[in-house]
Image (cartoon, rainbow, N blue to C red; front, side, top):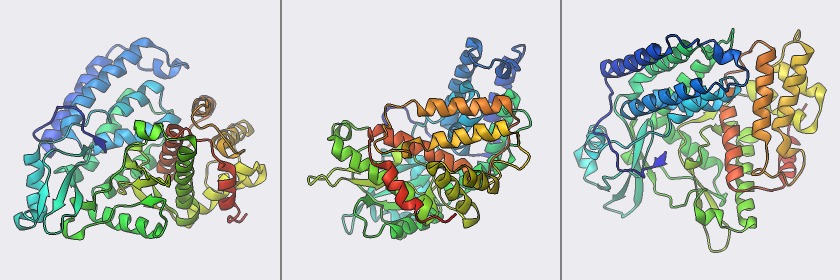
Length: 449
């Protein structure tokens, strides 16, 4: 969630099926009218995607959608954000920038509407036990956070309150954003979007279940019990329901805060190494991954002794993975880091990234792409901030798309890719130059062939 910095607030969100449907229909009709006569095929015919008219068109659509999304909230905005991370692999840059723009317009809902949800979920008697700040601490697409104090104990907590109706709108919202993208004809030829939207639906439904989020928060905390490098909020079950989640308030500053950015290189690198180690624990040992790595979901707790802690927030998108997928996924990572072509191709086929009769040129390109991804672990001291690796990997993906029919990867990869991208951003924000190869080799040594 993002902190609220602007004065704009909305009185309510459009939670009814009819009101949401009318808004989405109006957006679709407006876009369709503007598409008339534009020659949509040129999006894919222009290999460099430099047509200024198209860029201007998508910028205009982004403004219209973002404004409307502020009143709709819910899964439509969230799905756009999720697709923007994954879409870097197959959408034209203008389309992906449009999807990314949906996350920038998330004004908070005024207190009366949020209090009504609290009354419905907790009741007046339980609410009377709390002293709640009416101005929200943060707001996002699915809900917003208010700080509070338990009167009897003085404990400081936060209440994550879900916007009304967003849980019932997941299917219709996904149909709407898929319909918009189909109308724009931006999916690659022969592209099967079903696995992607199935994964989106499952995760969005999960993120509207705050009881499950409470369980996942406690499970994650149990995994880190005794590890003082990390702080996980405590769940207050007495004030939590399926639509309200009460957690301990955990102080900290954002990673991009000047206080963190001005830390010594040693302290920043230690934070970066701890962050990367947490990612490896998720992937290689727990098979439990917090798949929403937005920088706003982390805080840094600065300590006088220099042993700074990472405060971990928001476990709604935490996902457990089965060994059937994680086994070959880990083997593919290991083979990529060690440069073992034979084992890499075996794992890639086990995951259906590659198939027996694939063109050798495709196999070569995919191999180059995966080996490129693990460049930070080919040697120690990789400079995460001053590298063109993201740009090179994007160009490699476009090279694959232009030369071969797109094959939809395993659905599990959707949010793991999102996580990987977020890890890169966090490491870059911290200006990381660490012993990344030594760190990952400790985990890779635990993986069989």
